[in-house]
Length: 446
Length: 112
Image (cartoon, rainbow over all chains, first blue to last red; front, top):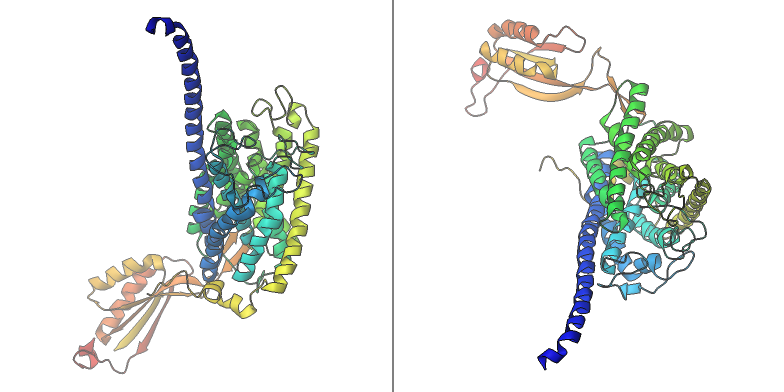
């Protein structure tokens, strides 16, 4: 009996072994990708708390330190809950042109199996939690423009609504299946946005400008001096942002592959080049290079390289960084003074301007050898021979600007009616830490 | 008894204190203060916004001394606190009516 069955059994064993091998290889790849993506998710959360909280916290006056940090932290909790209920589904459910669906509301169907539309090798749970971290930091960036004068209640309500009305549709349009601006899943105007130049930085930066204009200037601005209370905190925050950004950009490869390496390298080079160009501009103008200038330049470079990270090689990354550092320096020192708006911590000057430059330059510098997103041998960016991509980028930029402008203005009007947006002048003078939260950042005599 | 109030550059404080100790002055009260005389402040620039900081950090020393020690103390402070640049500070002298040690209620120069 043994002998007669030997031949078919061997055949079966070979095919079984191959199938097993196939499964093992897939499992190994999934493990590797999943490990990197979980680390990346944690890195991106670190950008908000403590990264952005420290960066902004040091830039405000001492009496508003906890208030601005608390805004970032509140979003870590608030957006997380919103994400679980409907946020993830509105961004990544369904295949609409403008917004997702309720397919994954309450995280229905989000488990260990991958979502093949977005990331075929990692559990959808990982993809979901990774994307959540982007949704947290984006509204947090806006608090840089509303700093030192916006009510906590108004901030919480406004940013929750903003996440639903502005962020979710934009994220779906750019990254979601079937989205109007999606570059690889059937969009009408394929906009390249590797890690969020449009979705994160233009949306938050432009909304920040609207907030600054709507709220009006801080009491005493610009006559009264309002120097940063601790550039040490800002320095630590900026360095944490730089490190966290590797998760933001390299993680956006959604796998532990060579594209992630490419994005990692481009990110680092963009940041370094922009730190140098901002510092150089300052040195020429003031005769000195400041610590605040160097870290602001690095952040501007990180912003601008964000949409380009997975599309460009190191030399274009340096070019994007140099341009972004100089332009953002000009925005926060010259343009802001010229128009007189009080973008307290320069959320628009850095994120709005840097994001816009980055989005447009991505259209110029994107390379098919780095990321053949339109198919093998099809040129991607302008220098690749596909100049109409700059036009696509422009469409993306215009839509993101328009969406952020209108959405933010309408929401501010609504929130103004419900909770009010600005604290009374005497509260502003006393400081938001005490008036909004009943505590102080520094009790040096206790 | 005289009271010496000396407002000096923070960078000279350690030298002044050591020199005073060498001539036998043990007690003093030190305060970190801000102010300016003829010295103009400096300019700080944060993201293109210029701020003039005209109140500069100084150290104020206060000590009450027996008459016999006053001249030597003043000479010592002058010698050690001087850098020759604007902003070196000032010394003020004033007469003191009475001194009382709280612990045992000694009065006058004995209380110093």
